[in-house]
Amino acid sequence: MKDEELNKIIDILEINGSEEHGYFDLDYERVNTKGEEFSACIRTNKDGIVLFAKELLISLKTMNNLKEKNEVIKIEGKDWLGYDIKDMCSLIQPIYKNRSEINISKPYKSSFKDNLVGWSFMFLLGVMIVLSIIGIIQIIN
Image (cartoon, rainbow, N blue to C red; front, side):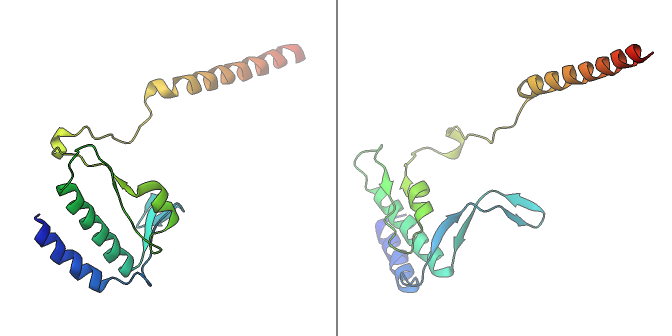
C-alpha cells in the first residue's frame, strides 16, 4: 500500500479508537472454547483492536520507508497496550519474502524416539514387579 492510502486509514482509525478506553494485551490463562483448549489469548476491547490495527499500519508505513532491510520496528503503544504484549510482541522483524519462501516452524510433536526411554523404563519396572511377585509366591510355597 502507498503511504497516502495508509495515512487515510490511520487517520480514520485514530478518530475511532480511544486511547483512554482502549485495552490490548496477552492473557496466559488457559482458555476453553467450543471444545478446544488454548494456552494463551489476546484480551482486548473494541478500542484496543482499533488502536492495535492503527499501530500495525504505522509499522507497515515504516517498513515501506526503511533504509536498512534488517532494521526492527517497535510498536509504540501507550497506556492502552498491556505489559505482557509490550514484553513479548512489541517488536516487528520485517521479512521481505513470500510465505512460500519462508521456513515456517511447526509446533513440536513428540516422536517414538522421544518416548522410548520412558516406555523402556515403564516396561522394566513392570517386569521387575512381576518377577518380585513370582519370587514372593515361590518363597511362600
